[in-house]
Amino acid sequence: MSEFSGLYAIWNREFKVYLRERSRIVSAVISPLLWLFVFGVGLGSAVNVGNLNYQTYIYPGIIVMTMIFSSIFYGANVVWDKRLDFLKEVLVAPIRRSTAFFGKVLGGVTDGIIQASIIIVLAPLLGVSYALNFVLVYVFLFVLLVGLVSIGLIIGSWMESPEGFSMLGSFVTFPLFFLSGALFPIGNLPAWLSAITFVNPVTYGVDAIRGLMLGTYHFGLLVDFVVLVIFALVVVVIGTLSFRRMKL
Amino acid sequence: MSTPPIVDVQNLRKDYGEFTAVGGVNFSIEEGEVFGLLGPNGAGKTTTLHMLATLLRPTSGTAKVNGYDILDQPGKVRKSIGMVFQEPSSDDLLTGYENLRMHGLLYGVPTDSREKRIREVLELVDLTDRKDDLVKRYSGGMRRRLEIARGLMHNPKVLFLDEPTLGLDPQTREHIWKYVERLVVEQKISIILTTHYMDEADRLCDRIAIVDRGKIVVHDSPESLKHALGGDIIRLQISNPRLEVIKALPFVKKVEVHDATVSLTVEDASSHLQEILGMIGKVDGVELRPPSLNDVFLHYTGRVYREAEAEGGFWQRIMTAEARR
Image 1 (tube, helix red, strand yellow):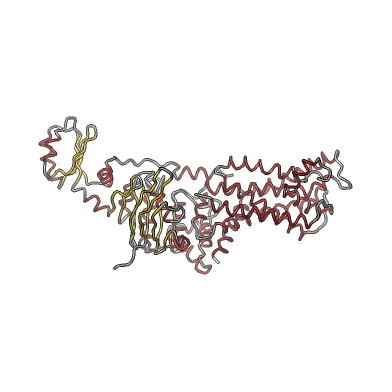
Image 2: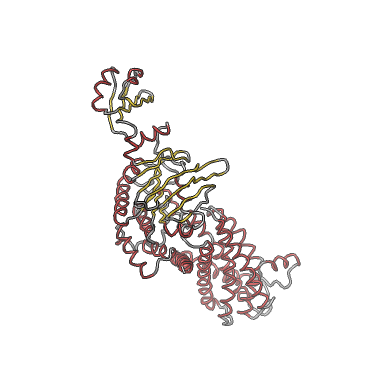
């Protein structure tokens, strides 16, 4: 019972802090809309992606991009918790380290879901239209977010300084995004590039969300789901171990 | 009378490779007692405290806290103690109330008693009217008080205070001391505190262990420690002391020379002062005072005590926090 209330305590704290940092929410929403507008319209005038408007085509990819950036950089909170010594309060409490980890995962997933929802609501204003398959979209977003947030937390548990975190964080986020098919179809890439996109778990997230919203798949929902669940499980295990190793 | 000690430390040791941070310490704390680990920075006080709080695994030795073994029953040990860290460890983007509530949840304090306990501890540290302010609007002293209150939230048997007034101004320190004295009376709790301030140890502690380089050199009540030196201190400013003559006097317990200053530990010093001055000839200055813990430290370690500032003090930490995001 105490583990459960501990989990709630940590989630609740992350959520409150998130709501109090408005600038973070605003920038997390503005930048994807900018991407969608500038990149979508600009590049869209030169690129042809079948019968879909390019802006509409990259829209699910932009949602996933927002998830990648906000989830990975959410892990910086762990570094700040170390810096502020707040982490000590959590580590000396009579709860398991895995509880602390899962509380933080849920906090990050909540942030991501809120951001995704804002973009989903605002998109029609930019002329993007999509199918309304919300339940499945959110199921996939959830699994993807669990995996991405865990990666952020793992990096956070390793790093001591915010500077070190942003270096490693950027190093991880950019390939995850650019090599995911968020901005281009992965069907006719050169073999080496297509091999890289196939091992990137985010590719399957983009494929599922794009499929659910626009009806065009590369792998199909089942493959996407299985790969994402395995990805999430693996990083959750690594994350739990990393938290257990973390020292004061 | 024979209640078991609330903290019982046996040969506790922590090595980091070649370096020994804590070299096998033994002590015990009775229920209701305020026990102090006093020593310079780097003496191993915080390391000892962290081992007792199960945050750090000892290299060898063990301890019992509230009857639970720190190696075998860390969960029960954690529930038995309230920890107030050296650095501010509350979340400054939460309010005082929210920090306390979160602590209650982490420690599994039942919902019905939680709100009542939050009111009690806020009352105890006089923060009731500021409970809904974000912690970043708190002063250093308020923050320290909040963290003491937080440490008490789950009704622990022992409160751990790691350098409770480090980096606070004299007036705020005085305040914190008053709160600590108050909670000893009102909460009937045992306290173990570390400090490198002599006056703090002297004022708050029933018993003190003087720690130097990972070892406890002596432990007793502050009064007994001072009394054991055998008299008061006479300090003489003198350029050419006739040491042999003074040393021969039966009531002079100890003679120490630092440059042009001679420190004498003298039994019944006030009645013998005239005699000493008569024998020693012309002096440039005289000071007579009761012994302090500084003298005790000097006596047992052979070194002059310096209350050097710790690195990364309280304010520096708060400045770091302000730079957040």
